[in-house]
Length: 193
Image (cartoon, rainbow, N blue to C red; front, side, top):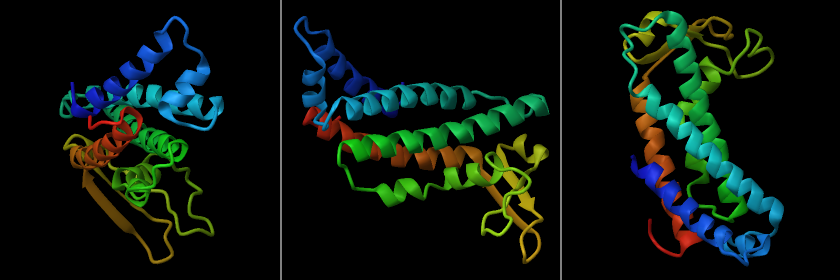
């Protein structure tokens, strides 16, 4: 179990203890995590579920034998893991907003793995029309080398190439995520995770 997983589990376990109390009501849960209302509480809980699920996807991705997978599976896995990181970014932003945590928000919003996700796996061929955003074509042979690599040909200045190691992008993101989860645990549990 990664440190990220253990922080999430620790927070969820403490929330579950409050929820499982025989006399527990939603207001105790709202008070426990210190949010304004039931809607905010539900958003936080949904976000924790999303973090758990996407951690599973990232964990499975780390076990992939890139050399021996079919290109179709590689596309599914690369698109999936990049989108998982994006979903984590959105979940952590929701949690921070609901808990009034403002530290590191700009770092979270500027995560490089999400920029690669936006360019390579969340685009359509018309991305970039009248915008500064452009679609990038993912190089299938580079995926066998654990790389997110490709180019865009629809930029006004001509072809632009981008390349990154997928594992490095995920590791960099995990460091940001772990740091923010530490802040969240400190806020919710009144203690360091």
